[in-house]
Image (cartoon, rainbow, N blue to C red):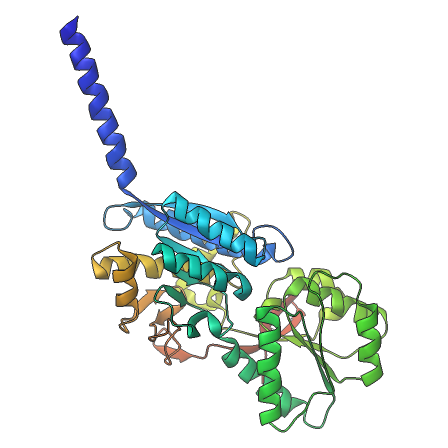
Length: 385
């Protein structure tokens, strides 16, 4: 009886030690973004991209023999919720984070991650101050608003020379920042806006705004903000007889924009990075998403790439220590991703080489236009400038 009990205890101890070993063999990652709320479409992209990358990496053996355990945090697009998500990830023992989406959320969350020793790669936060603050732990695989606004302002100054351009933004770190960068580049090109005003991103009735816009009779309305509010503004512009086209940035890059805005969205101009879905090398990954009913538009593959980079950097650094991994990432080493081959500068931005896709350099931002596709639905396609 005593011997039997001893054997049982020994077996229990072995199982407990085995379980502890398995727990240690989990590399904990988090993906944070607006899983609910007005920008939930982008949260879904970040979540889907990270989950698929984790699934693919785990199926191939994980990272240095460790499987990835992924936690999901819903920041609802709110800075305070973003800090809460960051604190929760810290408590869970997460050491690498993909996220967040909104620049105004990423900035305060990154302070928590820095204090907690967590490395963060944002797929979609474009405000310059995300990386300009000099934090060791923050990187992004997207471009910056001074790059995007620079291109948008240049295009507007050329295509709408001598025309009346109105600029509207949503008062957020992203939206207002992009609007101001676009305004600056327009001025450098010799074109001054006739209207510049901010609105609250959660408003639904823009009757007063549209009335003001009609009074200045714009030839173009530039929108600094996300697709949900921008879509409402455009729909209400059309309902009130204002036919001026809209132009915006990557915040419009989801098909929900057209669903919200309606048929009047056709002809909308937009700046965004080259679409990685169009790279033949990504055909299998894109089809994997589509087979389960998810179209990997906009930042889905940017999120996927963030996880790929974490894997490559950990393996090259031969360490899961976030500070050692960050140091390697800032060394200029190239990473092979679904976005192409890219490297980071000392700030954590994609280096000046941009993205090398099949050996050819791709600009960070290009011009798109919303058109009807073969199925009759509105979608965004690269424009012939």
